[in-house]
Image 1: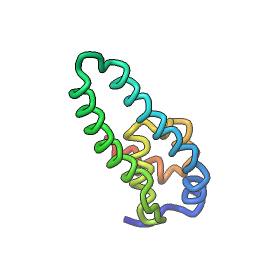
Image 2: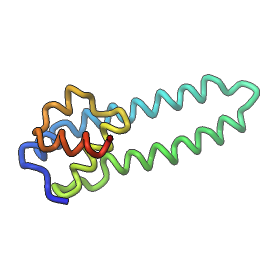
Image 3: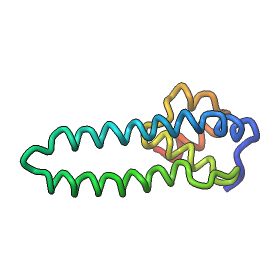
Image 4: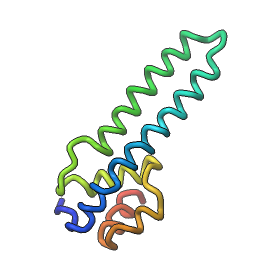
Length: 106
């Protein structure tokens, strides 16, 4: 895979903190759904929570761990796939990057 254009790399780095916060907030919302509905099923809720954290941690890694210019196209695609990157944010990237992401998600 070729590296992302410089403009897109800089944009990704600029958006990274905001996107990380949004990804975490989405996880917290899922955690709240589990914890708010745990009465009389505490153990199952714990197991569900543990499973959720494992799967969400894997997604966070796909989206954010060790971003390089050679891996950031996939990271952008994962951000879009997992609902962290909005359509408006995707449109800020180059047409080339948008096309790559759309091909990956089709």
